[in-house]
Amino acid sequence: MLSPLNSSSSRVNKKRRVGWESVLDRISNLPNDVAQHILSYLPIHEAVRTSVLSSNWRFKWAMLPSLVFDNQLDDRSRRHIESVVDQVLFLHLGPVDTFKLSMREHISNSAISQWILHLSRNSIKQLILKSWNGNHASGRASPISSLLFSCRDLTHLELYNFMLKPPSTFKGFGMLKSLAIKKVTLVQHDLEKIIVLCPLLERMTLLDLEGITHLRIEAPNLQFLKLRGDLKDVQLTNTLNLVHVSIDRNRAQGSSKLLKCFVKLPRIERLEIEGYFLACDVGSLPEEPCLSLNFLSLSIGLGNVDEILTAMSLLRSSLALRELEISIRQENEAANAGETTYWLNDNQNWEFTQLRRVKITGFSGVKAEVDLIKFLSKNSPALRELEILFRENTNKITRSDYAAMGNCPFTQLRVMKVTGFYGVEDEVGSSDFCFQVHLCLRG
Figure 1 (tube, helix red, strand yellow):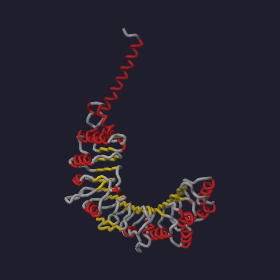
Figure 2 (cartoon, helix red, strand yellow):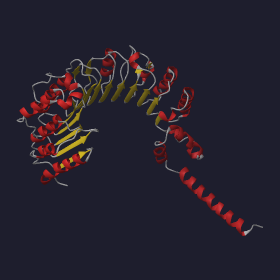
Figure 3 (tube, one colour):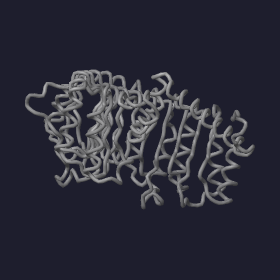
Figure 4 (tube, one colour):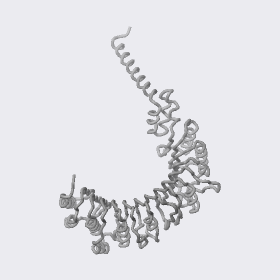
């Protein structure tokens, strides 16, 4: 006969058991789309473990359309990682739309080739392969299997740190809409061949391709293009739909004609210029105005008046420009950029009639930077939003500098943001500045 205490304990355990069974029953009977949605947020090795929840969940992970193997397996050995990927692909039951492999551990070429072969037979749509082991510049990057070029259903392809050589039989990726290759070793002719054989290509990112300085791009549906490296010239053919371009140059050496090439695009709306392009494109801008550009982002060193000339010429020719973002590069000569200040003071008659928003990042308080803000403020009668982001270790900005900026005619200004300043003096000065223009501010 059970004691009252044991009887009570038994009832509690029974209730707990019934409660857990109820929870498990609800989990087991989740609609398939809900279960798939939950699994999509789990790392692949955690998703596989859900097979022990119940018989209904045994193969749910095997129907996942997206397989991601990334740095969560970095602490495992190469053989273990290869074994995990092999088993997942072997046991997978449904179609694989997306496959991503991003590993710091070296993965054998034979293993990657087998995986690509398997994926090509399953109509893979999005393929992302990143190898963090090796150095493409020194020729130690791993060659990618030619089986890659048999994946005819690809819509997105992203490669990082591989050697790429399309076979002579390559007929193109007829469905590809997005291509991103970064630190990939290949020759100019092969890259141009890949591009022209992707007729539906809409987005393309080419970063740090060693040895490629000239490039011909023929892509009738291309809308977004991002380039970074040592490119000096790009020949655009049949790219009338290109509306967003981002270019970056790591070094200020040599010359470039890229700005002239992109500014002439008839539908260009967004242009982002990073690194040292302004220094390399002095005097290369066309005289014709750019009528469609409405967003411009610039990286600029104020110690180089040639960069100022190129930037201002670009601004002046962009008649429809509404948004301007300037990232100021910190350079040793910037603190004594007197020539830039003189030029800005002598060209106060320039006017940017459509400019609505200006954002300045990397502000340190040197006179040339203050004069640049004054110049843009005075010559932008329609300016509605001004944002200034200070960098660390800024110079002291005097209250007279803030007062000078505050004297600008902010007739349309509605939003003013100043962030990242250091010290009481900067805080007081910026507060005075905002107070001077408060009659124009709303909210």
